[in-house]
Length: 474
Image (cartoon, rainbow, N blue to C red; front, side, top):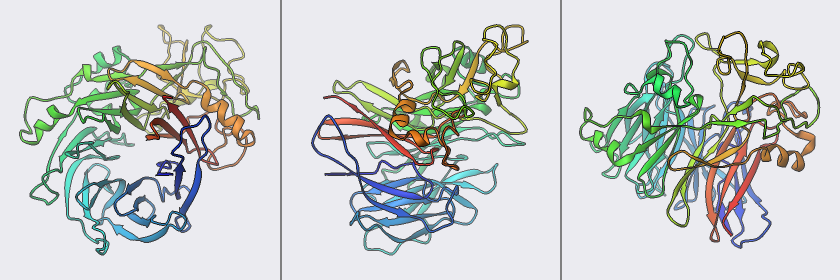
């Protein structure tokens, strides 16, 4: 049996371990062999959101946003997971992600500041087996505003950090990407870091190719692009960065980006051609449940209704011939702030003759949450297209951003068959259909066992978090 952590992002309060069978078979059974629950209160507090596994020490490092620390769990006996202790962060910083650095007996923790306009940091802690848990970091690297996660390149040379620079009620910090050199050591004198923003990108060019940026002139490409999550191909050649609100992925050549570590003012910059739009789900061909008021699983297709993929999590992988692909969990996201409110319901929009007269009925599409700046007709008098947030699917793209697969309606169909009583239930209330009008939170991992690989997608906004596996190869 192979131990695998497939619960990343799947729960706000528990870390779970699964056993994958070594043999290949037509059916797959996952066995939960251990669970650890953070002491209450935990509901809605992201008390166990991100998990990193150290196979050498059989420890899990868990981001506990409730307590602003990293919980350390001993999973040597998966049937009896125990809390070793916690690693505190310096005052004024809150953890957002954690990774293990193989060969260094260390972890890296991205941390946001309580000052929403200040830059974040990546802290490094010594976690050598047998030593006491650290109370202070080895060192830190200053990155950009609002660092959201960490990715270690497979060759172990660099950590990449998406600094989201999320839109605030009264300010709009710029997003950026940081690269940290870690292969020469983790002390303050050994670390090198470079951070690059998007000031070189042209909003008009990006919008024309399908990147989503609000039409208001105050929203430039530099300020509105918000990097969310990073995946790196197995050869450490390219990084793929989701920009969720913008429905795009940024492709970065790592060796060129790394040159900024020795020459911060060097010639490397991000270009418009590096930003790959992800397109839309066409709901005239893909039926989905659009209403939380019909108390049923009702799958409807409708022309001129689309899902904006807007992925958060992303993974990159190779096929047996060495071709690179990236896969996305198409979650969707909105911004509901004084400076930008981009979400409304279909029933509150003026629709033109492109839609049937009953489209606004609450039992049909009236309750569906959609974008209020996408889909206006040429005269600006009404909407001839509707764009919902997320596509309730996962997608696979080739290395240049061309779509090669999308799971379509399978998430909704499969979860209905698996648990019809709680179909599209909300994570706050266990009742049928509560979330059919809304986006769906999702994460994605990629793993291999017994010569076969699978993509695991967790759906965590349901009352009972779900894990869906797609197997590739024979």
